[in-house]
Image (cartoon, rainbow, N blue to C red):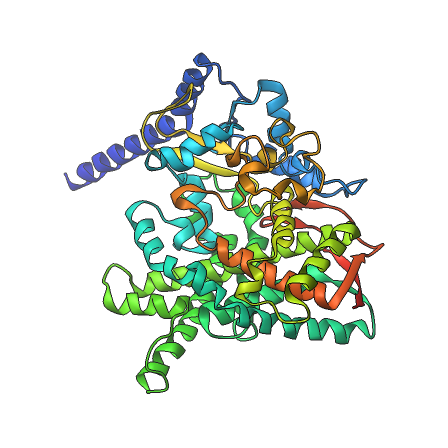
Length: 510
């Protein structure tokens, strides 16, 4: 009798699992595709379970193996070759599949505004996107949703108030000065410096000091894991992300990922414990007013923010507060190295505003041209090339009907270089387009979204821009530079939009 009960339970469980499998991986994709087709939205037929993941990955990889023949910034065809192909085939609105997740690609700024601002509560980060973010960032601000996100945002936001960031310019300048001294010493042997590695170490030092009260060297292994070790695993993780429950299987790649996160947890716990012990031993009266200090206060006073939350949030800000600014500075220096006339204009503004003094909170706010150059860099080489939001309830976006469970995908790189929005010079480096501000730079202000916008705008936006201004101004004060003849132009996706071969610059002391 007992054996029959066990057999019956097994049959019920197997039937339920089979029904869910058939529903999720076979019936639902076909039903949604048929519904969207009736509304005039078509796209490439999805492969069973995989969708278009393999095609997207393969097309990107094939292009990454070839450098660009010219110094062009028209890069949409390189970072999104599959989307460009489907746009030509199906029109500006089309559907493609990330595994079993249907994504409608939309390149209309007004719809972008509705999703990210007006109808923010109806659209949230997609399940597939969150799973991927959790793999390398943990459950920090970037990868939580709903009330959990609101709570984390309220906690973290005070650390990034504009006036507080302006007070950090001295710390940022101190980190930059040490890096520039090292570059100057290196120049005596070789004036050519691969600058992307240098600015990555510098921005790591800045986020370590300003957010965690420590140094880059102390957190070096944290950065190595988050910026190198985990990203090396991501392509393979993405390739297998369509497999049900893949992230829970004890496969070699997952075991490696779990081991890296265990090491990260241990390293970050050590930094947290050091701050806590300093207060307990009387070495300090408070946890401090940096990001870690604010989070420790919340962790001690609220049951809604646990020690686990604290560790996950530290992971997020170690990587997000470091990689975004490093990439922005790398591309900016690449562009100024390739356009000496703009470099000279920027240097003239820095000398007019700052003279030979270290930039401070007041002078940084007056560096208008430097800000324009940074905005134009973000337009041509945005930190994220795509943004996806899943529809939580059936919605209408203008004339576009979006069923529940369908995601809307915005190709940021495409929007940023759309000639209908930016003019015929959309693929060219022209910071003057921002001379009257972002709202006047193109036909629709929401076509520019390097940090997103609306309630979920990047909380570190002001920090990244002020940090980049201080560092760029100090570089311009001390060096002139040009692109090395060894520079190979190959922008491609590699844990963000990166120059595959780095950016070698030839420096001259001013």
